[in-house]
Length: 66
Image (cartoon, rainbow, N blue to C red; front, side):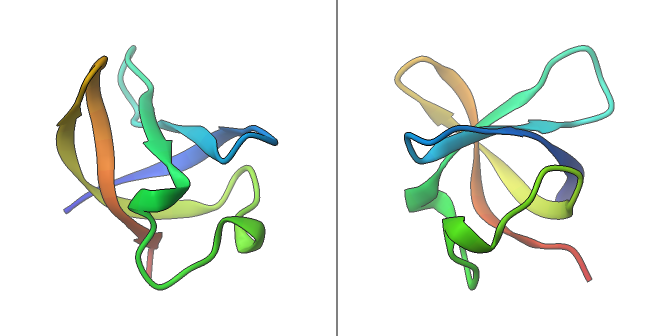
């Protein structure tokens, strides 16, 4: 699984992960695993798998990193 840092959260149930590259990774609250959207904070480390959404790459199985 890849790891990154939550860069931005919105009030609409989605956010972006700083992957350490020039491309941030989109994620939706429906892609969370073992954590609720309300528990997330900007700057937290998360792990995820890269998937494909209708608009391009997106993070799947997003959970807090150990």
